[in-house]
Length: 299
Length: 285
Image 1 (cartoon, rainbow over the protein chains, first blue to last red):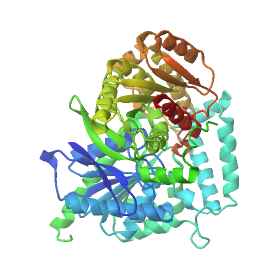
Image 2 (cartoon, rainbow over the protein chains, first blue to last red; image 1 turned 180 degrees about the vertical axis):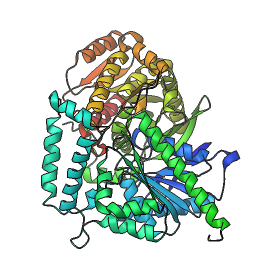
Image 3 (cartoon, each protein chain N blue to C red; image 1 turned 90 degrees about the vertical axis):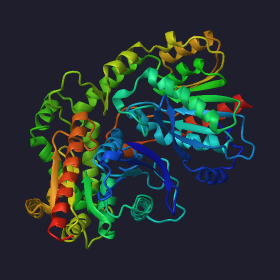
Image 4 (cartoon, rainbow over the protein chains, first blue to last red; image 1 turned 45 degrees about the vertical axis):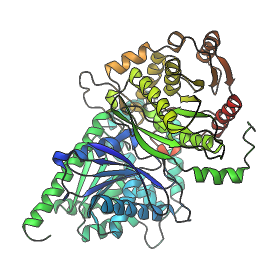
């Protein structure tokens, strides 16, 4: 396996690292994979997870590019005043252009944690070259209006209190007075404040991700929605999509994977391994699905 | 507030920093092991004759420090210092698994980075700037290198065993507060705040004591602390006894080295960065 540092991009100097598969397992028919920044964490990802993921997927035969959006990590700033999401979508497309021009890749799987998931989904809705999305801990509630944000947090804390993984510890902490009062007060304050703010959602579209996911499912883009058990984004998914999500998973349009005992950034090593295994399994299934469709003459 | 950077007006500085960008990313090798480096050439017409190698912390502190180091490298480049940031083997973008790192490897990587900077920039001497364990590694690597003019130690780890205990306490706090649930730990499974700690790594860290390991050092040293610490006082005395010309800066903004699940709380400590740049300018004048 080899890795190469690259600088690309029209609107800003974007820095990335390309991971190539070993020669014996390289397969030009496999889609390229792009790993998109999680918040402002640079391209190595939280706990160096993106490096681990990139090398693991390269061992499966994929060319993987992890890069920094403009203004993050080692990439330069943009000269224009485009909003972050718009700029990041354009830069993801520039990354696809790079892999097409240099490696001949025509199809791509986009993956990202948190805001990286957001950019992956939005790009997939706009660019037909995206043939799969691995959305990890999408924090959809942060783009909702205040009511849904508050409901997500309430559902989250109720689920945590009752969960097998965390409930017992929560009770123990409460009994022994081992409670982080500052964190609790902060959560209560943001919950109260959220009820009276609209965040980024427009009044006629209070839950923008619900529509986005519906659009992607309708257009047949394979989706893996991976969530940590301890993450709020999972509650948003259930709240926003409920039975619709269950139906999609039954029909295998969407794969919902919950990593037990994990937090938002997969701090524990065993959770990192679970995430990696889930991604590898999904990539294999996706590949088998494509091969089946090709054999049936549908692709 | 340190005003020694006033040679560049703030508006021009912003423009110059934008022009400096993140730098040139590339891989260089240490004993056939590829290491990632990011090189920023001096932006001034008359580049200084000394360059700077920046030594990151390791583990979760690496992520906390990354943006601050990028800013520091840009400021140095604007002030005429060619600067090289690099990732140790098994860390950041460099090759290797996190389990393959260790003090001996990282000190060797630091020496390799200094040679790489010399190859890239025509400099007579090199300053090392290290943060947390990176500061300790810089101090340990310096005696093995020729032409090291000085070392800036930003919140250095004086004792590896004390640091490990602090990290383990932080890890226990994380297990208590964060929504994580441990499975049965496998034998030999050792981890701290998202990163593995091997037996070799642990043994090397427990044995690391700057007060014992750091011997003759006839160079300039900048010691940066946010508060008075006994370990820092002892280190200062030890360095002075070893022949170093030590400058100490205290009461600067602190850095949140504690683990946080929310990575959006990363800070860039402008005062510390200004202080390092000002010291380097003074020392190399």
